[in-house]
Image (spheres, rainbow, N blue to C red):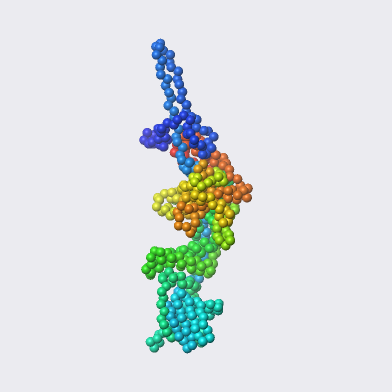
Length: 529
C-alpha cells in the first residue's frame, strides 16, 4: 500500500462527519437484521485530582465517536441483494435451410384497364379485383399475376388460371390468354387503367414465392432474449418471468424470426435507395416485407439441430472472458402461461417461471415480502438489467452487468380479464427488466416486473405480478424462501460496513468467501475498508 497520508478514504471522510445525538439513528431500522446493533457512545466524567488548593478542576467530557449515516433504502437494497439479482440469457441455436426465394408484385400494371373480347368484357383494377361481363355471366373476384400466369379466384370460390401476354399490334394493345389445353382468346384494350397505389400498398400486394429452379440456402443461426431474475433459495432456485425463458415460444419460430430480421436488414438499404420514402413509409414497407419473409420461412424452411440454453449470470465478468463461461446453466423447474384468452380476447397469464441452477456452492438470496397491503401511492422500486441499447457507449462492459434501479409508486392495483392481480406502477420497466424484483419501501420483494402495454403510447405505465404468484409456484415445488448461512453472514458483514467496523467487515466477508469463493462483491467491501 502507498503512503497512508497521501489519500483520504471514504472511511476518513465518514469519521469527520457531523456527530450524531446519543442513541444513534432514530427511526432507521436495520434492513439486513444485524444481530450486533450499534452501541451508542455515552459520555463519561472523570473525577477531579485532589490538590492543596480549594478550587476544583473542571470535569472533561469525552467526545462521542460519530456513527456513519446509513445509505438510502434503495442503496441498501442494491448493496445487499445485487449478488442475488441475476441477468438471464436464453440462447437458441440451429441450422435452417430453405429454397431460394423471389418476390413479385401480383398486380401487373400492364393488365390494368378495360379489355373487350368477342362477347366478353374484362376489367382489372389496382386493388387486385376483376369484373367479367358476358351474355351468360356477370361477376368477378380477385386476381394475381405471376410469371406470365394469371390466377383468378371468383367470388363463388371457383379458381382457375390462364397464361397471358400483353403486346402491341397494329397500334393497339392486345391481351392474349392461353389455356393449358392450348386454346387462345384475344382482348383489345378499350380503356387504359392507372396504378394509383402507394409504395407501401405495392409492397402489401407483393408475394414471396419459391424461385424457379431454386438453390437450397443454408445458414447456422443464433438468437434468443434476455431478462432478469432473483435467487430465492441457497440451493439455486431463481424466479423470473415465463416469457423470459420462452415458455410460450417455439424455438424454430425464433430462428425464423431471426432469419427474417437479417433478410430485412439486408434489403432495407436497397429499398431506401430505390424509392423516395419518408421515414414512416420506410418503416411501414420494411414491416410489411418482414411479415411476408417470416411467413415464407415458416412455411418453406426446415430447422435442424435446434438447441436452447438458459444461462443465469450474476455480478461481474473479466472483460477478456466469455460471458457464457461465467454463467450458470439453468433448467426450468416450472412455468406458467404467458398469455391467456378470455372470451376471445387475449390477456396476460401467470407469467412466472422457477429455474434451478447448480452453482457448486450456496447462493445469496433476496427476502420475499407480502404485497397484500401494498396500495396506491406507496413507494416501490424495480431492480433489473434493462436492455436499453446503450452498452456500446461505455468503456467498461460490466456497466451493462450492473443492475439498474428505477423508482416510482403504486399507480393502481388492477385485475386482468384472466382474474390475475397486477401492480401498476410508474417506475421504469423496460425490455430486459422482465422477471426482476419489485421492492417495497421496507426493502422486501413484493412483485415481479412483467410487462408494458404494447398498444399504449405511455411512458409511465408498467405492470408487475404480485410476489404471491411466484410463491404459489414455489409452494407447488415444495420450495421455501430462506436466507441460509451465506446470506446471513453477508448481511452481518454489510451492517458492519455501514457502521464503519472494518474488522467485523473483514471477518464476515472472509467467511462469505469461504462459503462462496466466487462471490462478486464480498472482496470489494473488504478492500473499501
